[in-house]
Image (cartoon, rainbow, N blue to C red):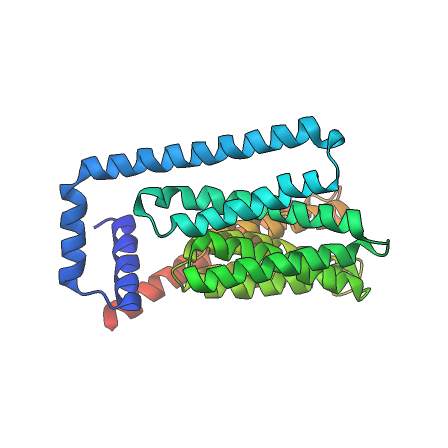
Length: 312
């Protein structure tokens, strides 16, 4: 059996254990899926048309707003932004109860997640008496995080988990910025939070969001930590941080985290080489030797792990 098939079977077994599925239920679902290829093709076409429909609706609204924005008063601007967005949100909730409109739910939620915050910002701009713009951003993201998060708790849709996460992270970043923390500290805090949330998402039915969270979280964590220790005696510890992320990627089985951490390590090696060994031949040779040693250790660990599995 190929490694890809083994990995797929392992994922199926994990999902079956997580949701309490029996062998008979899995077999019946596979038989139904194989017996109805026409329905599957129809579902793909329905999804495609739904997304295209949502895209054209959003494009039409955007073009209309762009054409007549300068001629609109405050009420008109609120109607075409917040009004359209909230209407799309209500339609999405209504369509969730109708199976024939189920594919239109996601595009409508996306339209709502874009137009509603725009409308809130328009309202704040029209009726505010000045002050720090970050307070407005805090209000907007707080309201949207509550709406999207509450809907996610009730409906359990992955898209709502994504939008809630986005608004929540912007809210937290803005709040931390108001406390006058340094940017690198904020970046580090947000990165660690995203990594933790991604780990939880990876163990849930919304695991498709975990790679996105790992990508942004790891990038923020490495960026923040490097800014903190740059040009200090502790700077070399950045290699340890990236190595730790590479190890973590094997634990959580995330190719995205492995990719980001590997890029981070390579970038630091390039930076360190340019700063301290620009014209030294010995440094690249040392890196090559260290790389060969690590490859040898990797092969040894692979063989040892295989031997342990065979013995158990």
